[in-house]
Amino acid sequence: DAGITQSPRHKVTETGTPVTLRCHQTENHRYMYWYRQDPGHGLRLIHYSYGVKDTDKGEVSDGYSVSRSKTEDFLLTLESATSSQTSVYFCAISELEGNEQFFGPGTRLTVL
Amino acid sequence: AQKITQTQPGMFVQEKEAVTLDCTYDTSDPSYGLFWYKQPSSGEMIFLIYQGSYDQQNATEGRYSLNFQKARKSANLVISASQLGDSAMYFCAMREVNTGFQKLVFGTGTRLLVSP
Image 1 (cartoon, each protein chain N blue to C red):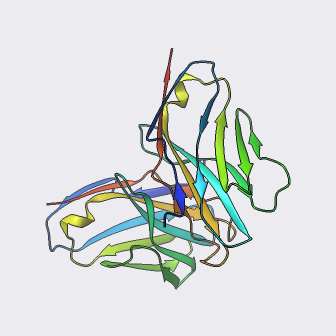
Image 2 (image 1 turned 45 degrees about the vertical axis):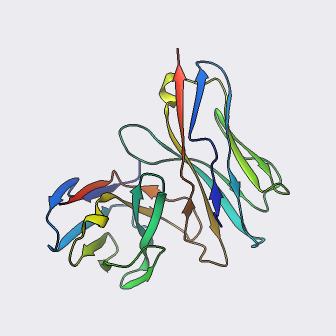
């Protein structure tokens, strides 16, 4: 199994508070991704990174920011959480562009 | 338009039988890749199989095979000899060169239930 961990695994927060989710990998893979999973939508890409300090937006990036200061860590920040951001968040990694992506265990976020 | 369409919200199969999960895709890009992932009730996403648009043969991985029909834009997953542990959600996904080779677009999934 690919070495990917996500923290926290579960979080309940209130509307308007900032939230940061962390993805940590031990595989030294270049590419990292953040997805959200909602019923009826499958997984949708929020942001991705193609190297340290190199990031780009995905399909549903509004309300989210990311940072990658080290190869192994990719942070997803909700500056001011809203109830529409209640979801399960998955981090993924891939070694080469276009290769299969390996997923972390997910973080269940509830915004009240 | 949906890039990836999985028309079967749920499928049932008996243990040891084969089952086909449908996936159709929409792209004008000649270079693309198709993936299948499994998500058991525990929640993790497990990569199953990959098919490249230029691959001449259908991909196979153990009991999983991908029935790739390029002209019909379909990439159905075939699971042979189903097992109880195959009960899960299955997602089809695609990446295209022209929208960013590293971006995956997922379908909404098919829930498979394998009965004894």
